[in-house]
Image (cartoon, rainbow, N blue to C red; front, side, top):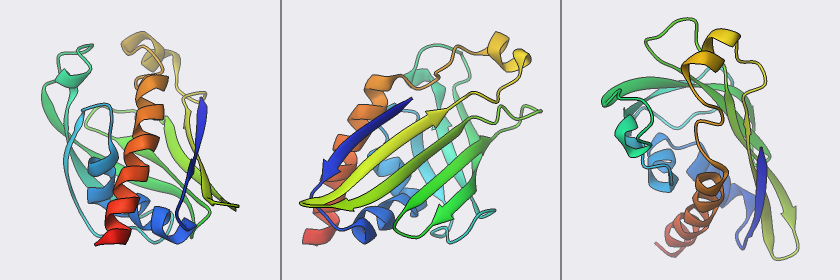
Amino acid sequence: MEVSRLIPAPASAVFAVLTDPKGHVDIDASGMLMDAEGRPVKQPGDRFLVHMDRDALGDVPLGKYDVEVVITKLTPDEEIAWTVEGRVRPHARHIYGYRLEPTEGGTRVTSYYDWSEITEEWKQRLTFPVVPESAIKATLGILERTVRRRIAA
């Protein structure tokens, strides 16, 4: 799944939000991300902790739990992607990411969500996409608002 939005800001300002663990919480439209701990990420393999609350989706009664976000791809001001690792093994290996393309008027931001590599076991556990397209689109709107606020501060 991919959705795009033009954000009237430089790619560096957008990327600053996307590499900040708290930025992920700030822009989340799913309602699951409650808080995050860790330093801004700089390279593939970097990790940070996210405190989650699955009740926001109302699909699986997990309540509150923690996951680690593991950066799988990071090219400054161009792309960031990650997977999520929780206590259940093997990990699902679904990938979330953003591609940034400078364009007239700002940055075209494409949010993508790829669950093509999940196993049959995970397909039976959860319905994919876990996060609906409407939440991915809403997150881009919140990202724009968050970037604007950070620039103005």
